[in-house]
Image 1: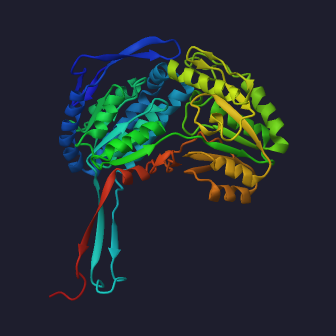
Image 2: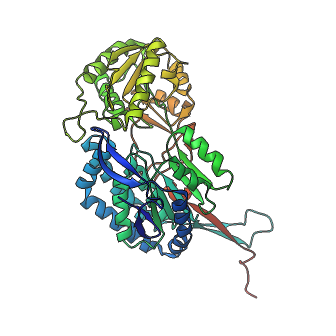
Image 3: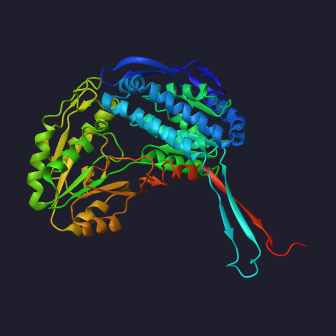
Length: 480
């Protein structure tokens, strides 16, 4: 597969390429170019022409292009789901569903492209401005660089590329190293739908490609989903050119289970939120479970009974519950974190072993605040359960984290729900459902080390546009 630069599909300027491996088998399934600094510079230069063409394009035309792509995604959902499964390792049901979500996202942004509304602001509340009026309009930022992660590449890219184009920008996509293929395929649909030359481009390669985009003078905004460490580096580099930065970063999401929770329903939610969704590789996955002590053992038993029945294996097999992690490095990192947790006093209830890129679904008890197993994000199928005695203690433990993405509470007590919503320093509080949820029409993002800003069909258009004001002095009154 090739990159897309200035309207043409091409290899790297120096001919270098990277192999794409199936994480379930380590089999090579494709090669993609490894972009150079020259390739990045070409893309940024072409985007200067693309941004003017997009800014001049009427909203109804942007709608038509994005709606056409949404239909193409739906028509090819099965094939795209299979392609994503082979390169990413998530279960085939998940990857096919992710493609369907992407189609909805494209269609949602297509509609919102027609609703980039400004405001009319009467000024009669200001002494001396009684006869004046102001209006505001929204304009494209220019060039958006979309840096996409491996875990939900098609869905997360769709927000960035469809949002950027809907707002009238040019977009340069930097694909995830390990799984760029489904994104590249859908990028073909964008080209075939009639985008202007240079309006959307695709670069493949490593971290150096992303850093070059962040440094580039001709890029106006970075929209990135990834690790907190990468986000800090982007902010540091982007400050040199004062470009806008939107970051959706890591998470260590807490789930608070109160004594009145439905044990069976809660156990099902924890399994889905940590083990069978994304193979545990989700920023908003269930990471820490805080359980009121009287029901702690019952919930632990219920979760353990379900966990030992999970089938780990080929993600293309519909009967598989948990597939591989994205690569060997990711699996080894999770293995090291579990070993450290046990060394710090945690106890293995189930799992704990790595098999190549696969890691067994693992339950830990005896995890204490202050240890890495409590404080750090584990990007894999590892679930610690921690008892608590008082509700305020649970809220404090949930907030005891450098992250603040999402949190969940299982209870039927509305007062506890509202207390949690008021107290927890996170972007979203979920009630009686796993934190591993994202609804494309809602603002998604976090506080603290989990990033800045919010991403969603309505919010992204504001993030990827700028507001301009027109002040009309003394336009009301008798005509001269």
